[in-house]
Length: 404
Ligand code: REY
Image (tube, rainbow, N blue to C red; front, side, top):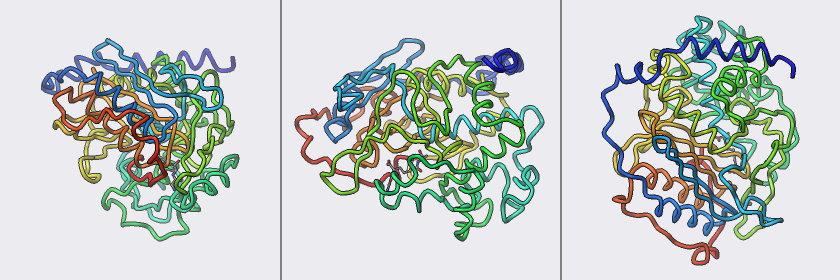
């Protein structure tokens, strides 16, 4: 396998550079209050509700201090009827952004990138404003318009138009720059895939390698993530996977099997493939300080308001749950797949959940409640445990804003 020995060396180098993680974190942060026991029955009920709202399948893997709970409902494949399994791989959409940010923060640690330097210092002439910094990009404060808003105004035709397309990063940035910017550099949070396309270009420029190699050498191999792949522009998910189904905008329309796609419209903003187990491992390692220095992690966790109960750091979200507990991670929405990957402040309880449906606000709203069940325990009110049979009739598509 080409490059394996160098990859292993790089992996070893990353790990050996890291501080003893638990100690590094506990010296700086007061111990978080103990979380209530997870509500596993509530979690199962939420997943069944998501299936009742039209998702072919829904699943969650909860790692609580090393005790792993796996729950799945519905199917991985509507044609064969194979049951969904928490071992299945899937497309993680924007959880990819956290991987991209980790790579860039490692480069900061190595002295090869300065967060407050202009992007144009590293990529001369790329952006029309020298004031846009790396930090602005990673916190969605660059003001760069989100080109994907144009691509998917009509969900199914929009998807079919890009399903097998291969974009260059520069082409995607050009699509964004056709529009006025949404704010001056450093303005308020405004979520835009364009930012993480810029991040991909930065990774390639600074490492001299495709993003796939950076993810592999710096994250996938050191953490032994055996289900995580960046195959762009290939359209297939390797091995065993859940098929993904896009909900059409027209109520009652047939679901579109969106499994095969290049995801070229998202790339470093959203094209990774992974599994619930690997996402639990990744986020836990991140919050426990195993992927970067304590200083870099602190930068990643400098929060700005991102609407409602959410804040954004650098490629990382913080959500305040119904019980007041904060969780850290990202959501993802690519056609066919809604992903939820969050961990506790100390990285000791991690939840990765998937519905193999997208473009359905009902499914998304149901899936968000996996977080309350996992981190707030059974004291939380409002866990509906509606069965598939009770709600199967009122399924239809919806917006995705909240899904990203
Ligand atoms: C793209 C549209 C959403 C998904 C997006 N995802 O920006 C990024 C993320 C990578 O944050 C699509 N929605 C759907 C529509 C809406 O087509 N008209 O839900 O499948 O994960």
